[in-house]
Image (cartoon, rainbow, N blue to C red; front, side, top):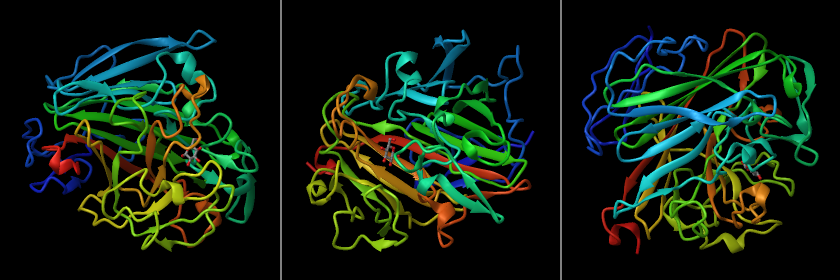
Length: 420
Ligand code: BGC
């Protein structure tokens, strides 16, 4: 069975996704800086055949990362929605089949106190309504497409409009509102995970082609949650998948993220019009409130941003050096008070930094206040199908869409090092 492996190198920043079929050694110890981590295959070039544990069989390896399954709730039509908990003994993550959604990430602070650091709802009902994509897998096209229109191979397609005049996050019933089917992936000693599959029919929300998508979540003993996206199509189409977790490193519901210190490894950003559609310019961050090349508190310059509701809701052009696997550091977020640090690493070309501007305390938005959480969405640029000079989001029938996002958690060594 082909396997997609990831190794973290000596410096702690070099990642490698080895070729299919490669087998890499794993030597892990929690939080060690020079360990090697292996993530199992997402799906390779066989999206419907990930390296899963066959039904009614036990995994062959005893893993340090435990996976348990339970029922999270039932859909109105009676179908059960499963929840998986991945637990490495230090942190744990809950993921449900509805929207292949992360519903909780419990991470310790510098005193060992666990908090759930991602916004969400306590039960399925919250996720069934139109909500702010808390923790969701977003697709078929994450972010906006102007007027829901694009032309592919000479044919113009009209997508559903669900964000004023535009198409947002896959439409009225995007991938966040689908029941994905799930299977355990073959674990290793230092990782374990779950694979989620969804087949989007030709014409769904206006998109051409049947798209077979899969998302594999893997937790490692090094406190990394790897998310591997994979898709194939039977007709030329467009794809842009991401995870839409909202983070508050103090804990979901514990105030705002305005004190969090953020670094983004990007020297340009995409200015947008009043309806949040990119103008097409890739502007330098130099001398602007968008310059996060060194750490700034999110709230420090947010007031300089004009518009309603204001705040950051912009895509950054990632410029970090890619490792052999094409993965690079996109952003680092730190909560000085708790010492929790999140790093986002990815193969994707862009990072949408959204500072939770539309959160308003309403129940359908989880009751969280404005800026109660922020998103660091690794993805392609918004409205790419209408900008020939943006990296392509076109996937053809012989193509193989693969992207990786890694959320890596650690702790600031002391209050001094966390900028206090
Ligand atoms: C977008 C925001 C949007 C939010 C929730 C983010 O990805 O950039 O504009 O309000 O998702 O839909």
